[in-house]
Image 1 (cartoon, chains in turn brown, orange, yellow):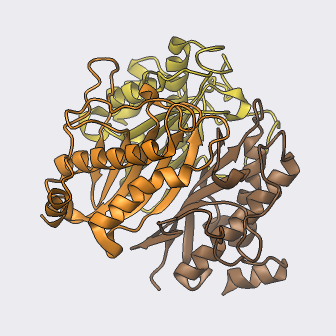
Image 2 (cartoon, chains in turn yellow, cyan, purple):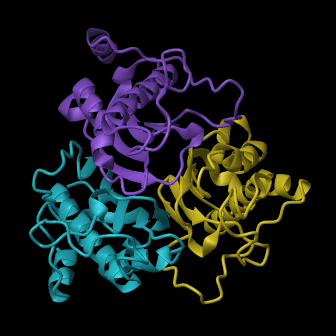
Length: 161
Length: 161
Length: 161
């Protein structure tokens, strides 16, 4: 459980499952495991108890670049938490393949790569230079659910359990 | 042909191939089959004859949430129709993996998950709890082609023919 | 090296790696190769020297449809260049699977498929009717990094080296 140990060393907490308090039905899998792949649904920033983490709003107006970078880190932890629940052990991830980073942008905010670096930096730190690298897009969306500033979906390769 | 039987039981019709009346060249595959995967291009809501289904416009302004949910159902039927044409039999789908739901939003409309539930609910109803679950994002786009309110792309696992 | 020969016949130049002049850290893989797949990160239009190609801005306001079609061609050449650097030989591509085309749209610009045709037409011309076809979406984004008018990500199947 090397990845879990690294998280503990860094004082990082994997949050509980997303809890939107009955505000919305979400009839899909947060992580879909099939064969040697896991598909990670679009995640947003959450608090350790699974509630949606503030600040909310448009990046570049309601949310600063620094806050959005942190939101991308929290989003990554939420992805890892659901991945751990699905796989049992994060060391089963053999390669990050694709990261699709979506930023809820105010008009004219185009530093979307600097926001999603909060995800990429954490993945590379935790998973290292063999497993961690991923193809990525980081783009500006008109609206995101729950007014979250960042949403990320991903695909990873996994080993047999 | 269990899925086709379920569609008939529910009175659901798989539409003909998309027909935009020469308004636009679309030089790509609606479904790309390769090995044990089928990649489904972005689809929109269509009528049984393959024409683009109304209402058109931005959800939250021109199109209500209820209309958009129905548009997501029609979009799913269009995806299934092209998948059937590509595979011959929808029972060859062994797992829905990824659904990427795009909603053409009016400013401030963020109930995008409730719209794309029109797709997820139908997939789970038709394909059941083993094959139907999928990782999903449901996000707000600035613009969609043909002014459609909903567009969905997806990836599925398939068995040999 | 059939694809490289076709590029030369058409006078098309694969650009150098993206160079944003230190304007932004980009800590991810432009192409992530794993097993029989290559995942291509979101790319934009570049000049032969790897700098971001003009014109920049919103399609339908700052950039015409014709200019955006050409930007999609340049974007495709940038993808092919990174794919060649990752694979050694573009003939290792056995199938284009998924193309996700993103257009930075001015309000009301919905001819996004006509823009991304600049990518699809080139792929089909170079790779032919067996390898070239791909599932595709072509949608309007609120903002793209570096103010580029077009960004495209993709997934391809590859043969062993």
